[in-house]
Image (cartoon, rainbow over all chains, first blue to last red; front, side):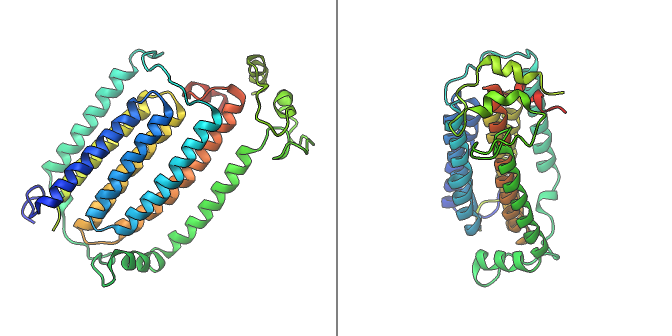
Length: 227
Length: 101
């Protein structure tokens, strides 16, 4: 590989990369500038599909499939579910900005960081270093699925097992967070094992249905609880 | 031989920057989470690119684990959002000061 930019490449690959890059970038910009959170989520799906195409182009077929299934199929659906559940799917004005200097400061910071990153990447040649001598090779008989499966269940077995613990912790944490403040999940058992949240009597009192009774007065009431 | 890896790395850097910018300027917590997902995806793209350039499957294995961490992070983060929304009827980052102990 003489130069990273001018490697031997076919025009089909270049065209695929160009289209996928446009899709990815427009989706990323759309996530940031969309006023409606639902539109942001849909733009995120677009970006994820573009990244999946880029994965396929780099012979990471299994990861492309997982990307579409897990990200677009599960994570974005979870986002949309929460958006619909909370009812925040309305336009928000992006013009109103409480901190006046935040946007120029953030923009300048990001531009500076990106310029530094790109200059560092293209100035030095660390990005095209020597071939790996430590890890398992990518070109094994059976393709990337076989190689990935073999390395996950041999070299990275401990990390893989730790992953299961992480998922269990996340599930337990989500259940704990989703509990009603004063009682059990269904709201039928109101033994109030957490007496310090006494200000939430109105919230937990309306039972299984969603807490429509939360008035601004209730909010002011719960504010006093936090020590 | 497909396209040179530097194109992918540059694209990933730009996507990461867009995600970081969105994280800094947006107030809606859900949109901020989506920007975090953008940054994670840029990192994944970098991992896959290096995996191809260095001929090492470890990069792809790491992407596999990153996906798991992203899923767990979204689950817990959205749980926190729902729990706070239940009290404050709002989902902007300014409302998260009630989390201080």
